Length: 332
Image (cartoon, rainbow, N blue to C red; front, side):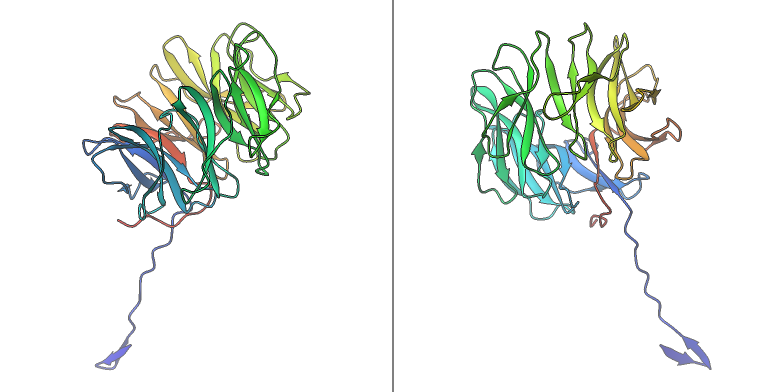
């Protein structure tokens, strides 16, 4: 503070208030696929990887402090992790399945992922510091789609070891692998509910790909969707009351939401182009997704009731991932 000609001047510092949530995504806007982050309204789009290789598939840690991602090098795809502002990138594993499912453990200490390094696809876990690599499955067929139970004690997954895809569950260390479903048609893409009481999955057991839900002990099996369209990629809302999913009608992909109780469906998108890769906001009010409705795939956001559609990016973008909790903005 200083006084000038009888007027008191007070120096005020401007404090930037962090965005309540952020969205990570991959974009090729600069000639190469890199990881970016932005505020939920599309502002402050910031590139946080700067390598000559492709970087894609961002995945926030449960506390929002880190981002795991895939990096393509001459030897194949690698699993990397960095701070949410892009600092301290480090390689964890070489040889991941690029489009395979990956997930942080609920406590943020480990990442489950898929690798076909030994011929068939198997499930591994590794600590976030790169130590403690563990191969959890070693069956004749592919093992895919690992998802942690909310308490971190178990991992559900899909396995082809018995001739077609079925849902299995195992302890987090790979022990006690137990088959939950048994059907001649494929059961895959398991997804554990936020409170751990149910597992959603995709099955074509009734002649078409639909969403089903069951308890973790395989009881109380229930079909949630029943539509001529093929329904896939179930994603639980944070409160566990709804599932967002892709609904495929011929060459068109749309995003819908179904209530777990009552099975009421809401179609969020109906553009004659691809809409997919939905990611819930941490409060369950909105979803980010990819759409080709205006040309190259871009990131859009929409309210969970189908209102408020907004374009966030106008350049080629993929793999939107909403931060799980309030996070500080990335450094420019």
